Amino acid sequence: MDAADLERVIENEMRAYAYPWTRGNFTDCMKARNECRTVYLEDEIVGHGILSFGAGEAHLLNVCIRRDRQGHGYGRMLVEHMLERARLRAAEIVFLEVRPSNLVACRLYESLGFNEIGVRKNYYPAHVGHEDALVMALDLRFSLDGSGNL
Image (cartoon, rainbow, N blue to C red; front, side, top):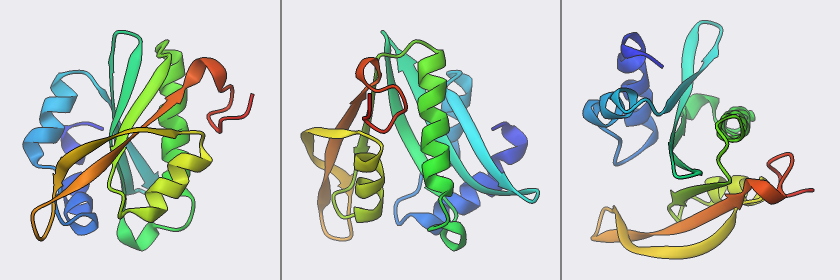
C-alpha cells in the first residue's frame, strides 16, 4: 500500500464498516513502516490489511475486503499472507481484536488457529454505546502453517 492507493482503500473501508478507519489512521501506519498491504483483483483494490510489529510480536490491526468481493476467500488469503509476513519478520505471536458480532471474521480467525485470550470492554463504537472486542492470539512458534496445525 502506498499513498496512491489511499483513495480506493478508504472507499472500501467506508463501504465495509460502520466505523471505518480514517485517512490519518492509514497514513500513520504507513509512516510507522507497518506492513500495509493491498489485495488486487484485475487492477482493482478489493482489500487491504495492516500489521504492526514490536518486541517479537505482531498485531493485525486491520483486515478489510470490499463487500462485493467477500465470501470468495480473499480475506483468508490476505490474513495468511500477513501471517507469513509476521513469520518473515521473526514475530513469535500475532494478536488481533475482533467484534464478537463479526461472526464471519471470528470463524476465519479460529480456522487459522487463533484463540480467544481476553476481552477488551467497550472497545469499539456501536450504534448504541460500545461493543466489546475479543482479543485473539496465534502463537507462531507452535503453528507451522498458520492454521494451528503442527
